Length: 379
Ligand code: UDP
Image (cartoon, rainbow, N blue to C red; front, side, top):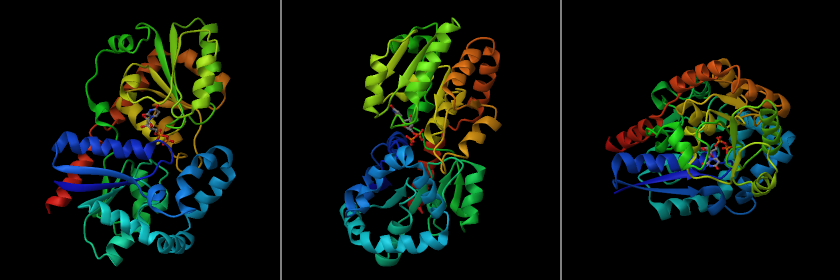
C-alpha cells in the first residue's frame, strides 16, 4: 500500500471538499492500493498563534474585508512573501517535520495555498527527500501566487488564466496540468430523473427549483436573498420552490427554519449529498465559490452569482457571466426578479445556459488528477 498525504486546511469549505474528492477518486480508481490521509497541517501541527490562521479566515472574509484585501495584495508581492514564508518556515519547521515522520508519505498533495513553500522546502532541502510533491489548486481563475512553487512535481489547475499565472511565477509547461477542479466523484455519476430525485429528497416533483447556498460556511447575505427571492416568486405566482443550504452557519439555519415562507422552501444545514441537491435543482444562487461553480457546471446548472470574496473569487464572476452560464447581481430584490424571469418568460434562456454549463463541466477531473499522480509513483 502506498501512502498519500493530503495537506489541507478548513479555510472555507472548498479545500476539505477537494481533499475528500481526491481521496474518493483514489479509492474508486485504485481500491486499497493507496492509503490516503488528510491533515490540517496548520491547525494540528503548528504552534500558537500560527495555528489560529485557519480560524481567523472566516472572520477576515466576513467582518474585516479591508484587512483581507490588504493581506491578499501583500501576498502577491513575492518580495514580501518569500522572506515571510522563510520566517514562518523557521517557526514551524520542527512541527511539520513531526507530521512527515508520523505519516511517512510516498507522495504529498497540497490543496491549500499556504502549504507549498514551507513543506516543500523542508522536504527537499532539510530532509533531502525526493518523494513527489504536487499541488492541486482549488481556486478557479484568480489564483494567488503563493499557490505556485517552481519545485513542485506537478501543479493541477482549472483554467487558462491559472496556467498563465503559474507560468508568470516560473513554472514550466511540463509541471502544469490543466484538468479542472477536483470535485467529488458522485458528481460524475448518472443520476435518476430530476423528478424522482426531487421526490426522494421530499421536494415537490413538478416545481422549478432554485438552490441557494453560501459555500461550506453559509457565508454572505444568504438569508436576505432567500427572503427576497421567496417573496418575489410567490408574488409573481411562479410554480417554484427553494432549497436553502446553510452549510455550517448555525445562526442562518435557525433563522431560515423559523421564517414564515410564502412558498415551498426547504432549509438544510451542512449537507453531505450536494450532488443530489444540485441534480434536483434548475439553477444555483451562490457566492462565487470555485467548488460550487465547478459542481454546478458538471450538473448543467445556470449560476446566479450574488457576491464574491475579493482576491481569490474575483475572476470567477466574469468566468460565469462571459461564458454565458449565468449572471451576477448583489441586490436581493433584483436577484428575486432575475429568478422570476428565469422561472417564467425566460425558461428557454435558462435551458440554454444549462446546456452551456454542462459543456464546460469537467466531471472526470478528479480521476485525471489521481491517475497522473499514480503515474508519478510508477516512475
Ligand atoms: N458544501 C457541502 N455541503 C454544504 C455546503 C457546501 O458539501 O452544506 C460544499 C460544496 O458542495 C462545495 C464546497 O462545500 O464543494 C464549497 O466550496 P466553495 O469553493 O464553493 O466555497 P468555500 O466554502 O470554499 O468558500
